[in-house]
Image (cartoon, rainbow, N blue to C red; front, side, top):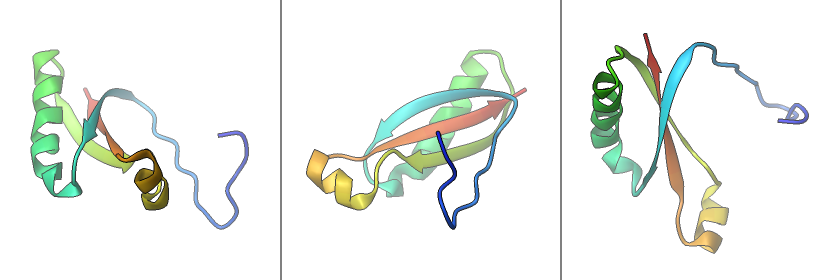
Amino acid sequence: MTRPVPGEETTTLSGDFLTKVFQGPYSQARDWHEEMQRIALARHREPRDVYFFYTTCPKCAKVYGRNYVIGVVAVA
């Protein structure tokens, strides 16, 4: 981010994280959550909080034909 977005709150995450890109409807988030935990355990790390976010807005997703979701798991 190069500058603050007016009217929006910026949050910074600190710690150790693993990430993975998913594609599909958000209704699959439960499966993605479990997969993020398995990824952490496979790397001998304890999974903590799991976060998801879209890479584009819904309007842009229509233009590109897909909308990726990023999974982020905090690990200990």
